[in-house]
Length: 110
Image (cartoon, rainbow, N blue to C red):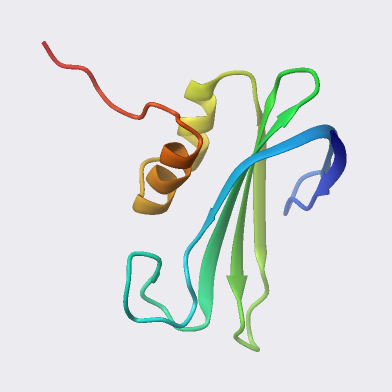
């Protein structure tokens, strides 16, 4: 276990003891492959942590290399995997994170 402090914009930062479960990131400058986000100089990093108390910490960072922009940070403390999926949504990068973490992100239909 390790102690983390995560930056969050417009809210208090989050500090906890736990472990990184998984992270996923798009790419800022490669116009090929599944990790390209469509905009040169910008990319997204998603991280999912689990605290020693069993909660999940979701963290999203919108990175930029552009001079007129700054990185954007958001996060949420979640009790359940459903809350985790509400935070990250269902974009391709989120689905990569879910696959790496063995989180089932499907709707069952009879």
